[in-house]
Length: 279
Image 1 (cartoon, rainbow, N blue to C red):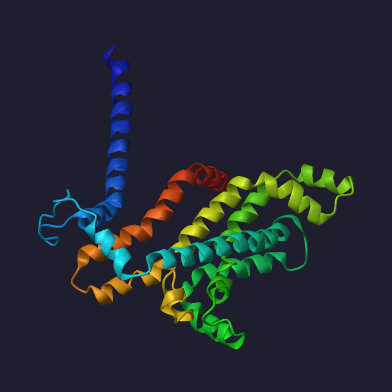
Image 2: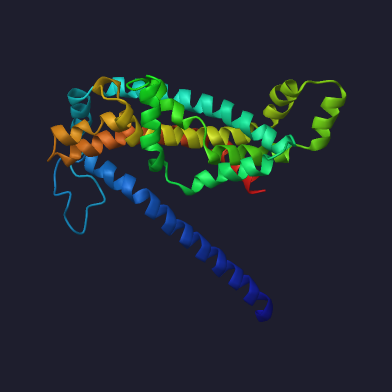
């Protein structure tokens, strides 16, 4: 009996240890957002005290009201929604069109093309800012949303994920459609694409988070404050309220909350797509 209980106790200890590690990681990830929320809803106390206060004192929404009073945050929300939605839609279209032939068509130099695409992942996105800005200037897209969206509609990560998704589709299904006389566009649009919906959702969610949080590139391309997305426009709080950290924290919460809520509602699609990508 004692010998039999020993492995069971080891398994229990292992499970408890795993949950403790996961709890520690969860607290580490949640802490910055929680501390920012505490600062945003508090009106009393020193926010830089040590040890810090992890619970708000004198809860109030005055800081959020001040954000709406100082900056046109609703206009910034509209700009961010337009940029994010357009970026996601165009990225799903172009990246799927690029990934499908790399996965299912055999042509000379396909491996070289795919290797060059993957090689771009080594470079940080900031390296492309100068070239992209010159290009946008030459074609007259500075101070336009198209200039913000266009450089982000094709990325190596999205192509890689969608290529892996197309690789998971049974080849027999595609061959059967070709035997029946279906054109390649019909196979792509009506047969293959619906089968990779979880992967499309994953790429869409990742792209939405990236586009919503993008700050440097919109700040470079757009010079009119009224056309800024939320990530760039909310920084006007820092200039106007240099010493009001609580108002800045409230603006940060208003920036993060929509994309966080969207991710929570769509996380099941994200996890299904990531499971397929890992396979």
